Amino acid sequence: MTENADKRRRQFLKSAISASTLALVASTGLLAPKRVLAHWPSDAFTADTVEDALLTLLGQAQDIPEDKVSFKVGSPPSYAVNGASVPFEVISSLENIERIAILVDKNPNPLAMSIELTEGVKLPFKSMIKVAEDSKIIAVIRADGKLYQTSRDISVDIGGCA
Image: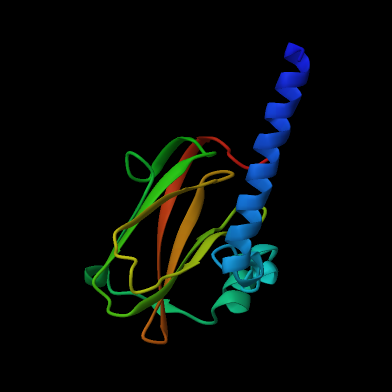
């Protein structure tokens, strides 16, 4: 057998094994994209204003007491060199947190992130978001069926949204 035919045969076998493994995983229910995409709040992610995104996704929120949450944005706090990757952290003493949403006031689409928490997820929650320009970053927490919000201002040297 030529070397080229040998490479094609190996590639075919790798592809066949990968496809059969994927089919096996999908048939067991471990890979269920319909379940993941069923809860995608597209109206909230395409909203033009913070208020529209909040109302579409969650509803009205009241300000959260400062002793119940620690919300940090930027590194150092309130500053980001590159808006394409701005770190944030949410720590809260609220019980039964169901959802955390992060909104950026001056982004083209204000809703930057929204996650539903399960019992297995423990705070602090840390991640990165994109920020277009100097803006207000809002954290909304749903706990025990009530909505709470807090915000921080951030200065950005280079915008992260195109």
